[in-house]
Amino acid sequence: MVSQESAFPAELDEIYQEVILDHYRNPRNKGKLPQADLSSRGFNPFCGDEVVLEMKLSPEGRVETSRFTGQGCSISQASASMLTQLVKRKSLDQAHELSELFRSVMQGHALTGEEAEQVGELEALQGVRKFPIRIKCALLAWATLDDAIKEYKAKR
Image (tube, rainbow, N blue to C red; front, side, top):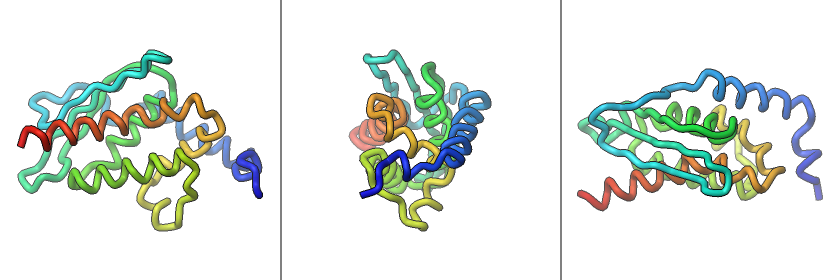
């Protein structure tokens, strides 16, 4: 059996760290979204990380715009930044499927080539699995997305 340490060579960890830090320092789609169709707030009481996710849908029901605000560690904020990029032009069901895929990755699922293409830069967060306490940080934005979708569908 291959240990998780050897599954992530030091060079790969460095590349992943650079991607995470870039999203943390230069967050994509950060800010409020007036007149959002979906909105939800996620909070991790163990570390104080917070993500507020807002999305505007196209008439066809695809994510037209996605923004977030929040505060917390580099993992939670980078994950939120990546989420806002990945869900663009996706249906809510596709966004939820992406969330489920990312959740499975955090639980140890090894990505296939096709899945790696689907998650894009989010793959950089795979290294977080080595630090179980940080997995909740990586999943905070995705849990918030799932809550927003659930609340939106319940209102319809």
